[in-house]
Image 1 (cartoon, rainbow, N blue to C red):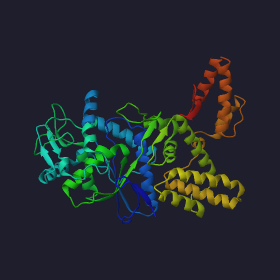
Image 2 (cartoon, rainbow, N blue to C red):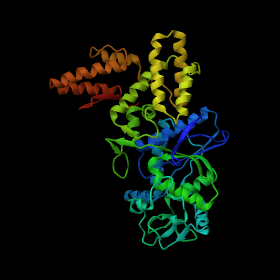
Image 3 (cartoon, rainbow, N blue to C red):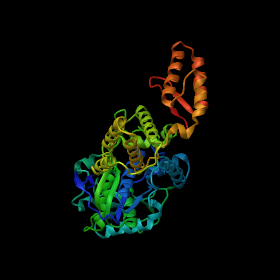
Image 4 (cartoon, rainbow, N blue to C red):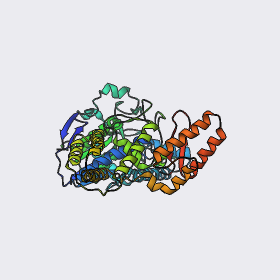
Length: 465
């Protein structure tokens, strides 16, 4: 049986849902700036999840929203001297490209916040009518003192919230911890008419409304990054309970861990980010996708380019191992490994470890047994969204590679060993201070779509992989 960790109960739980009607909401991007690797991780790990549910024959309705209006979008658009909508559309196109290259499934519904303004206003009015919302001179706010289970998801105290850096600090709020449902607009800011004054929705109310409108009052899985637990998801719960106190808003809360860059959390606010599409261009979408598979989705994941390069090589070896077979469920052991690991809170690193051990042991098996393993391994990875195509066969002909390396007296059998020898020859030139000759080698290599890194971490990658 599928077991998943519920962020609300802090327990590993059996998943008990109606397999014929599974409703999933993933908090999607705020389209203020280009996607970074953290965005990629959230998109990919929950794509693994949706694909696995479909493999189990669950009927899934998958919604991922687009936040296309908030304070940060307005500020960024003003800096660029364009409209918030121009900025949002431009950034969203970057996300679409990244999701396509990462081979993420397109959600069944992708609601944009600005398309739900009338519904958001209606939702806020319900909160006011139920005594959870109040109007001030700066906007409409949620009174958290009226919701007794506030902060159950995050486990924080009100004192921590009050002293936290993300709390809104308008003077006319009843309490520091209250949060905005509707913000009255300032001069030259986008705005919509409402019963309380022209303005725009708060961030949290957008998701509560879009969930209600697209999936209904109760959903099975609410997904997102662990950084969204507070305040975003905490406030979503408060809002949903403010509209319907008898509602079971979410059955299972799922959160992915953060990416760490040099031991620090990767975040826009800290300026500690790497752009996702740059790495996709260098290493290929499948390699980036495979990198995310290597860590448990709930754990922090350390990132550096060496790990991404290792992922690219490992994935290519896997593609080479399976390139002579079609995907097919042929080997019971591989199927059991797949089901067991994924049912155990999507334990993908354990899955990889056990599959690679089986592959290693194929040296002692006969051809028929090995083919069955290859077929099933390919099937499993296709379920997880990988095409398993050998990068060198997709990008460039072996014949051209062979001719290129022959110029440097390097015998070509495979790209890994040839490039290892090529780098060694070039490094020998550099050590002899023959930099001009070494530069020529690098430029020659670039002509066939390969790039060499100089410096301490010498390596190579396909330019157009």
